[in-house]
Image (cartoon, rainbow, N blue to C red; front, side, top):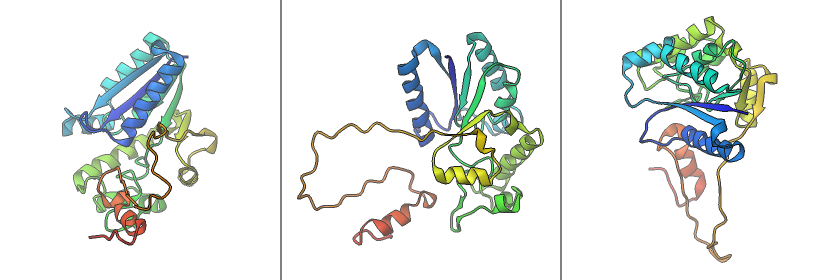
Length: 246
């Protein structure tokens, strides 16, 4: 079985959670199937200009053609797309029409329904306004993407165009990461028959130097961006009485 993994990296010098999952899955598949059975198509935002991104949000012709040729050349049977935003977009699935391959996407976030992708607004909390009101234009009013009205408008407009062409119908299966996400996706209108559970994974080697049972000191390690949306304030509040929000 030949598999193609597609991923849009945000920055080449920044390793995010989605990037880590992509690298881990690529290596795991190569170990299981062999190096010659697994292919990747990766793009980075480093050299992306506002014009390139805006054009890509409408239809990324260049990437669509390259991916299609790659599939035909190597007779790839499964195409798994991780992050598609902002240079690839869901138009990639449209470009795969007519090819004999299974089309899968991992839903790392909720960008299809929420402009900032996480159903959260700083200073407000959990937000599903666009979903409940069935209008993405609320995101523009609240400048949800990078706190910019113009950039949020571009994101919202691109998904509205994709909806008009019913691109979501081109996806055969979605990988979801948790049961909470599963129920949200059902509420958002995803066909449950297309949902497949594939949680993220990480290698945790056994520690050679475990802490002794009498160890009483509590240490807290947080790995992630220092942003309100990541829940860092709640973590500090709940961790221990000694840790207070400043």
